[in-house]
Image (cartoon, rainbow, N blue to C red):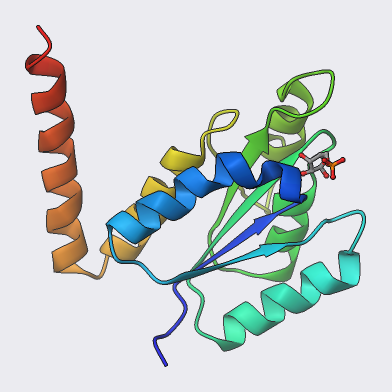
Length: 157
Ligand code: RP5
């Protein structure tokens, strides 16, 4: 069985349309991942279990997406020393401002690398960059992606 590299957690199925962009990046770069719906508030024990199971399966990076009072990334961070990437989701009346602050403003000692509101693509890319630290092939794919981005912009001029 292929080892698990990334676990994507999201607080609700309503977060899925955004988080599919993170999955698309991991598919694009051939990175193995698993996606689960787990909530810091609604399913705290199952969230902790998901972290334990993922670590046992070799998971190297966690991506955690939640909206409103978004504590999922912080709770996962409290249960692992693997890097945690937080994605604040624009759900609810504050449209992600609440989730951004809840995700990014972690106490000293418990870092969550937070991307922008709904920044699922960047979360996927940051996970790939973390994995690429020890992977020449992934590093080359990331360089190719930067070149492709530049070419796309220049071709529009
Ligand atoms: C958060 O509350 C979820 O991550 C979601 O963004 C938001 C709303 O959840 P639902 O009411 O759609 O399940 O926990």
